Length: 257
Length: 178
Image (cartoon, rainbow over all chains, first blue to last red):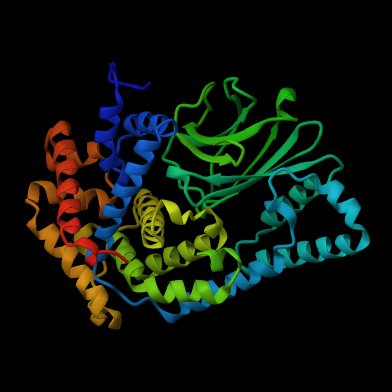
């Protein structure tokens, strides 16, 4: 049960915070306390959905406006490009790429290499594929296709909604994270990776800050105990990192619910 | 949404055509800049394409999911721009008289009428915090500072305002909702 300003909070206290949560207007401490409660309270989760529907109605009070037709074209072009490169198996959660690679044989190898090249060309053509980004993508691929390597996908939740990340790591715990569409961080703050094994306290990883397009990259060494059975989370912490998380989770791997 | 999750491009295009003017209007209201609003609009629909699997129809309407996502991305962009001091003061935001043809769409006009009428009936002391939270992305503490009001008062007024808004919309029964 959470505490805010020294008071023990009860179910009714949390219920009263829900309308403000639907407007995402809670201050950080309140948001953290309510998030903890929501993870355990189905009634409050249902109520939050109802309040979110009311909050969403406010959107139609804005004057409807017509975007440029080019936006529609750009969206459809982009999803077609993505469809071409979707055979890159980064999206599967815990798949051992090397095992799959070997079992599929030469055809899969050709597809994978072709997809990688297409992906790299797409990146390059999108004008944000600097040499550094290409080098990072190549490094990530090399790590992900190391024998015994795994790739985990992390998805944004709550404050991090919309963000995504892929974490590749080999059997020795050498890890590389590539994240996209991260919310910007205020001055003095950074994102921090966490390794969570069972019900033990999260083990801190390194910190990183995203660039102005929301992309971020991190190389880290996983704790030995995390290599076989960890789930992963990202929070926003002071630049130097924290020993224990101090913010809500921004991204998490699917194994955490 | 199921069709989008099944990678049906036409379904995404249909969703875009249905909601683009509402979402773009919302993003223009938040960001006040056409270029930024169009960029975020594109991001939102790309995210819908990538995350349609996450939509659970038992837990809400597509409209709510889409608007919540769009507003969240709009507020994120607003904060990013504000941190770079690239956003002009609210009064200097890009004015635009361009209103979508869809504004004349009878259904949308009716929905707007219901919501605007309900908001107009709220006392300013309740409506103000709601608008600052929804369109400016301010937290309760930031709103209290902005309005020079005690934090507890802002919390009460925001909650009361949203409760009244819900009651007024509910009083229209099934007539409100996309």
